[in-house]
Image 1 (cartoon, helix red, strand yellow):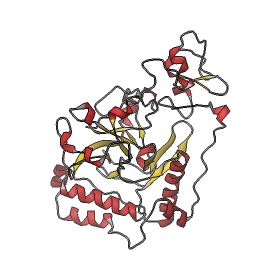
Image 2: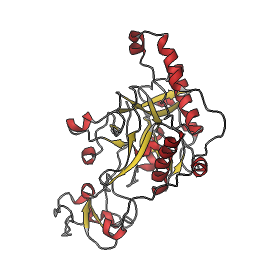
Image 3: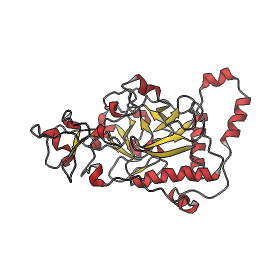
Image 4: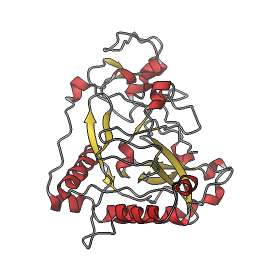
Length: 345
């Protein structure tokens, strides 16, 4: 099971260098109420606008905020928040944005899967539970629209597109990513599943993206929808970003979508994926509210960590058949339940 890093909504001790959005959590004498619900309860989750000084609960904002933002924060009125401007639907711009490799198209995963299924019985297929590569949309124009939707979200969040784990100076080196350090051991990705993952990577490099659309919802913010039917056990994407030591992120008040990569026995060897600077579509796939039965019913993805050639990797995989137009959700917490997902939708 995957372990997620608990993103923090308040600090343990008052500090002068904290953003003003955290001030309410440390001053019980402030008579501040939320502009949306008119309540002053849960002060630790009440933000102050750095311009007008009005208060807003994290969970009353639209889109909701699931953690206290780092640095200055401005309310919807003061920030004049607007729907992000769409990325130009121009093929050359998209090719440059995603660094697409020009060349012959890769082998169709749909035809490959069909051939394999003819040689195996239904019973064997169920027993082995092999991962499937995603099947790109056939229409090239629609694929451009899918890529443009992701480019829009990445640009709006000031995130560079990367489709692999990145190791940058000042954070954890690649040599620190050793799956053997996983507490209790980590499951090894089989040869056939590794081939499916490699095929997904190859297709993405050539612009044959997963059949997904990133949409902007006034309540959820950026979220991801299936743009065609997706079968159970299909690889949706790898969870990527900068790799860092968990110990370096303990005081990260924003913690934008950080995910555990390596849960080592030694806390100093624990690693997390930080997608705030470099990432792919995984950053915009939503977590469910796992505090309610209704929330769990929406879960259609699972987040699984694998040992791939000695390194820890995180995959998002369909855990049931997904219909076209269905939004993608997974349990952000995994087997930990410390993160306050009650504010997820």
